[in-house]
Length: 117
Image 1 (tube, rainbow, N blue to C red):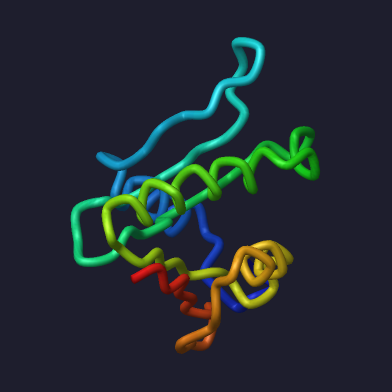
Image 2 (spheres, rainbow, N blue to C red):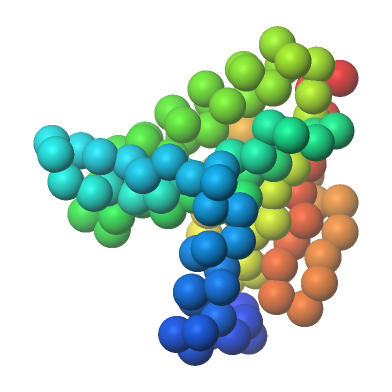
């Protein structure tokens, strides 16, 4: 977050964590917390609000698999998928490989869309 110029203070991180928490699922791997996934299906588009995978489990395709499942769900519902990604986050490459394109930006984030309709 700091590399993107975003506020990384404890208060800001707590606010970010609690935002949309009703859409959150805790990811478990072998009985241990492996990450957090927030997916909002309530609007005109499906929104990836937050995806976090524990560093020890990154690079094994877990995030990609989760996104592919969500994309298929959105496709079945006739909805596009949107997300925001911090400019310094290397996950942007994954999103682009899955077909997301940048449709806007702010000082810290790219706003991306996967058109499925």
